[in-house]
Image 1 (cartoon, rainbow, N blue to C red):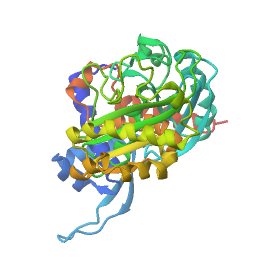
Image 2 (cartoon, helix red, strand yellow):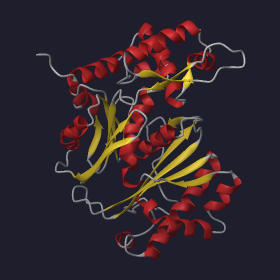
Image 3 (cartoon, rainbow, N blue to C red):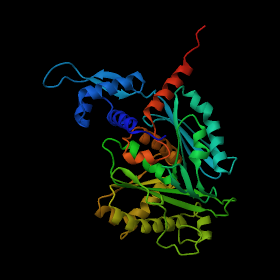
Image 4 (tube, rainbow, N blue to C red):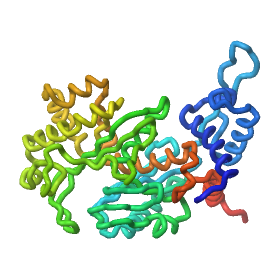
Length: 397
């Protein structure tokens, strides 16, 4: 929703305080005021608003300072304030997670998708997940879906998705606005970056690279053959870098040539055997790492995360990484960048989609945010929490 300046400032103040407690559970009012350089009275008023809305609660007492006085009351985000539904949608399947506000997975489900049309597939999966969400007895705060393609998350537009045969589809206006909770969409690889930002939130990671590698079978809708799909996400200064066309991270191998049907120089026959032939898989990994060398050298990241199906072949991947004497490992060592395999496995994108919503919820708005399709407004969040808890109260006779 679009916000005026007064509402913007109020949301910014609430977000600053809520974000600080989310990142540093067990912090006191005095520490928040000191860290954010706000008046104690301002912090006290915001905290009371958050307590009344069941977003924050007063936990245990802290230690007395050297100056003496009363023990500070430590504050925490209420993990029961609500839940988030994160989805990964592919042309033939879905993966879904329900998480609490700390990103803890409460439920996860995967299965086939009957509808090949993205809006219908989205509605199908959300409806399927409805009883799962209701079983948590937590208010649903929002939904976020990750998908392959070029996505403008600010305007909730799918700019281009070959698997779903979509171009310039205004998902927010056509579908998202029909739901009673905020609905967001994001590129699948970028979802992985949101997951890392949520997981490493104190202290926050600044510069890193996420590489999502997933195997796909033959797509009857597009005619694309089986093989490996690769997407990347770039995070600079703690923020996702999208590029002017939202196409940052679109991957092309250094061996790719015009006319090749995939992102790599490998032919279709090799790609079709990649799941069964370790030799072909090693060739694929070597080509991938060779293509990532200049990216790491120029980008200078702290960490490179690997996500998706590649993580199930960690030993083989690590062998290729270690044995290439002039390969990626040498560049990684030079720029002091570590390689980390995701532990989330198949649910990385879905969990990352949920993490995107949490990242947006607990982020401090910027003036540029008012131009977007949706800004998560704290008053709306308070309403969703109140309505959710009201529905769970037994009716009076």
